[in-house]
Amino acid sequence: MEKMTYRDALRQALRDAMHEDEDIFIIGEEVGRYGGAYGVTKGLIDEFGPERLLDTPISEPAIVGAAVGAAMAGMRPVAELMYVDFIGMTMDQLCNQAAKIRYMFGGQIGVPMVLRTQGGTGRSAGAQHSQSLEAYVMHTPGLRLAMPATVHDAYHLLRQALKQPDPVVFIEHKGLYALQEDVDLNAPPPAWGKAAVHRQGDDLVIVTYSRQLHYALEAAEILAQDGIEATVIDLRTLNPLDFETIRHAVEQTGKAMVLSEGPLTAGVAAELAARISEECFDFLENPVLRLAGEDIPISVSAGLEAGSVPSPSLVVEYARKLMK
Picture 1 (cartoon, one colour):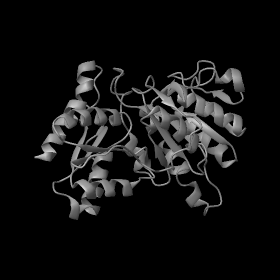
Picture 2: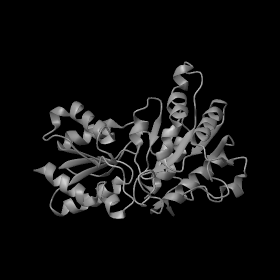
Picture 3: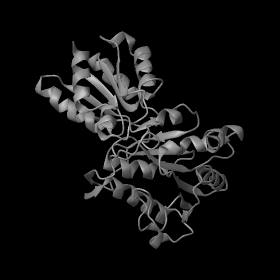
């Protein structure tokens, strides 16, 4: 077991993978000499050189486009976008090309690349640098989507993402980089696309992912003091989506809440709530509750920013409402 931060676990995953596979290289803005906007690639250029840590101009379409072409040619690029907010500029390269190549070529060629980026609130970065845009990715067939919530998963999910035959968008929450936990780097990796059940309870299910996992677990401890026991599920990947784990938990409890930091309308929470309602209808005692971010641009004000996304206290309030 090693104690490390979420940031360090990501760096270690990249380092280990690059030692194992010479076709892996990292491309993006300031990923080399500067070490990445959030320090994830710090020091890797000294170990692997500038040919495998490629600093690029400020052009997200060029970064992703070059990665797509390199992946089609047999390399395994890791493209980094400083903020998920910039993913809109790469939609043609990512959604019209990377996501479609295997289908368009009849399965003869794939795009084995990883797009690393970060999203979410917590740094007063303003409306253009604080969004949760995972629904954009989840909506696009052909893209895989991983969103690790723990240090263990930051390491093991990134290692697994780097072995997938198709493009993986890997979104890291900016509020988790300093999170520190004990990690067993040699532990068997979790099955790709398998959710993790972090807590078992008989009263309700909270389905969530990324930073909201920690809020859900904090809320579950408070609820337990009132005799309400919650099952907390961390999806880990949104595509593939492990709905069987959700189904089993809902069938056991009859009450479900979906928790997401992304906007409420037409977001990940909406999709999950709809699927639970459709596929678990006979077991539900109450309608599925959605708890998600406000449908507003994120404020630069720390107080307004915190108030625009779910908090542990709000999770507790919604859970109590569901139990009535």
